[in-house]
Length: 415
Ligand code: C2E
Ligand code: MG
Ligand code: MG
Image 1 (cartoon, protein in one colour):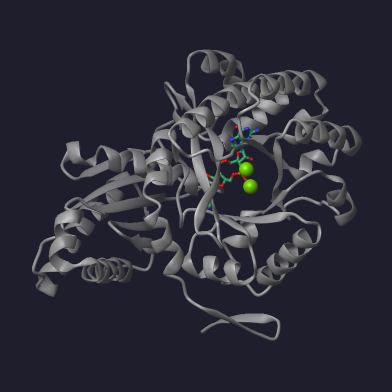
Image 2 (cartoon, protein in one colour; image 1 turned 90 degrees about the vertical axis):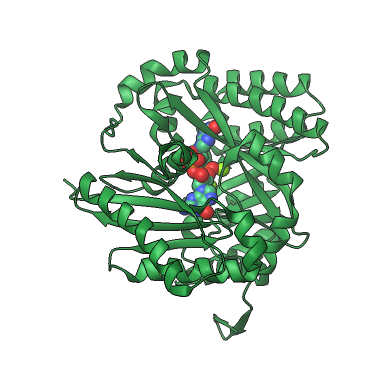
């Protein structure tokens, strides 16, 4: 049993544009940084997850929900006090969106998405809005979920978020990946980690993926019509590569939409189970013009000999190596050799899980082709992706605020 709650809090400057006009961009960033440091220094269990543009993101622990609510109110008060102490020419108004849960492995993203949802409604709730995930049914009952899936698809409860992939050299969005979400009427937001495995076990992954494929094709067409003809990628469970009916139906759908620019991300662990038919079917997709990417590389057991046989154009390094990149001794070596290996096999390399400017800088020095991660953009609704594509100068800003790395022997140091 776990004790206490993990709390994720997003503090946003609501009058960002006004204050920026008065303090200037650099001035505002420095004030935000100071306030963020002050909050983080306040207690041992407060961890600063980031401070950018108009947002401070913190994680903290609290013994229970009441204590968590008190901590957040205190935090709002402290942010005002800190500003008064700085004697600023303009006052920053903050609102907080937060979420908490009893915690557990892999809960971070769920918490963050819930905190974002809370932030979106903080304005209507006096500047502080909270989602308590511990009262929602956390013990996601797989059998119930499996039984509910067909209804959920038909009822339109599934939707897609998109996360851009950035070409490092061109500093441009190269493509985007579709990630499925389930807005459950009682449980709230259910992330794929909670239902993809269940769908695979129950044989419903084919229907779910066909739904996703149709949705992605429609979105890709809308994107092209608005002037951004980018390829959209979807995740294909390796298990489906042995499913002849799925292969036939998906190829029929793709054939009916020859103009759609599509990519499939395939998790390598699953592919390896039946390599021969998987490779044959992958070739069939490639022949239909689908770009293939190997997902989560390094998390499984692929061999070089096996990789060489796949008609894949892109290798995605698993985020477990990327999130620790600048704090680990071993991971930079693994990432560097993976990039070289992929290039030798004439594949492009994508690093997923890029969360810090330091990781981005190091990946860029190492010759990584594409990056994807929270630093650049979280997975966002389709409309937000379109808006993002319209403001790509923001991207150049993120990409250029990077530290420089020098190679010394087998390790990397920050210049
Ligand atoms: P994936 O394809 O490897 O996707 C990357 C996951 O990492 C996503 O989680 C994404 O939201 C998260 N992520 C993105 N950037 C960062 C970052 O900077 N830091 C960290 N820590 N995480 C980041 P998500 O959306 O929960 O998806 C989890 C997995 O579920 C996906 O892993 C994919 O394997 C699977 N999945 C998602 N959608 C589908 C789908 O439509 N069909 C199938 N078969 N699987 C899907
Ligand atoms: Mg993927
Ligand atoms: Mg992945």
